[in-house]
Image (cartoon, rainbow, N blue to C red; front, side, top):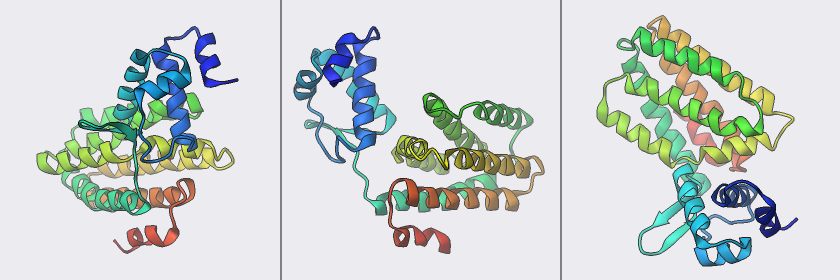
Length: 238
């Protein structure tokens, strides 16, 4: 069935269906990194007006799958393997530091919110759940970092999280169904290990668990996004 026919037959808002169609095309590689997303062309291809396409493009930018270039338009986000590993390397150093700073100051209320976060995440294992799972993952990490009270460090980490195309990682993991349960479970257990160290106010252990977690992420990036292993090896030396 063509994309245009799917849009016509759908009873959902056209902006939602257009967004999901474009999102799927980016993740599947039919829309290539760096490719321009022209409203007029996409509207013709999907058989809709430019209004739902415009809304879909805004959502793609918000999700990190596309980027808005002033005075030029919107294009599919483009990261080289080196770019992605650079983001992970910087996050490993800065986030480990933020967790260490946060440990003595994290409040019982924040710890309770983190527990609720992980309990909710346990129930999200299907493809339709991945968007919420990603939200919970981001919320978990940034909540800890914000507890450090180091506002400039937090700003840097928030920028790193906004740049990284985590949707590609989660969707990529889901396409490897044979290893997905183990990966999602490992993510959850590593989060619990970080939380337990925070509860004990063991700053050194909390930092170590965080750095180990991010290094494991690098291995998943290698497998899911096809990043050459030699590019990722720089993380092993930090």
